[in-house]
Length: 216
Image (tube, rainbow, N blue to C red; front, side, top):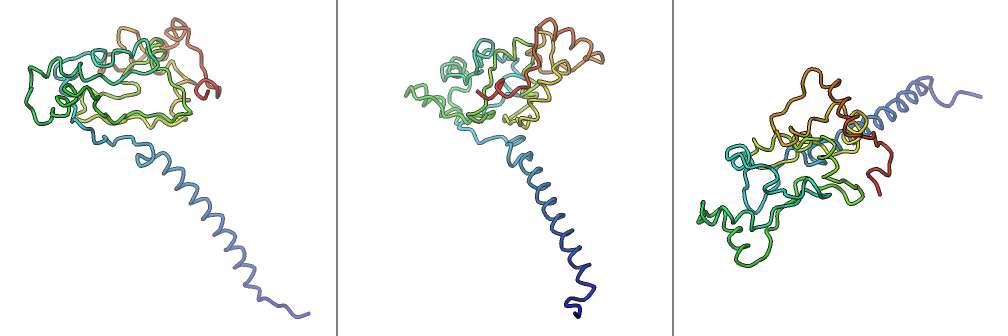
């Protein structure tokens, strides 16, 4: 029986299969990069807030402690968004007529809260307790970055599951003394691993990397 296809068809078939495999691999790589990019995670992009609040001015310049506005950070699952009363305590005397603070004045007069855009907004299927991380030696800047230098606040960390698991797997790399929790300039010392292991024992930190630790 005569040959139906020329011998070159074999090479063409092999090239077609190789091209299909490479295309699938390329699409998978693009998808992997996209889901971890700022486009998907929101990292590095400051949301458009109703009031252009500057942490650099309030925290960095004026030295206001994180807990003055985020009072529930140490004992609640959420750090909390400060109520208008917290803002107006100062701004009824300082910059009281600033156009930028008009939403604050209107909120104080009407009793309706300001509709802030949450910067760190985890999915509903993720359980995160803010207070337990503070109690276990995780500093503010570990997750939020140096907000005291941000004119507008943005998300620093990707907030992906991989990012969380890396810290849960090796907490000794990240934990710090309780006295340094709110120190935005704190940097890990050269012997961080040694000190971190001691703090892990001292704080009784459990390396919770199983699913139900965060997904309940």
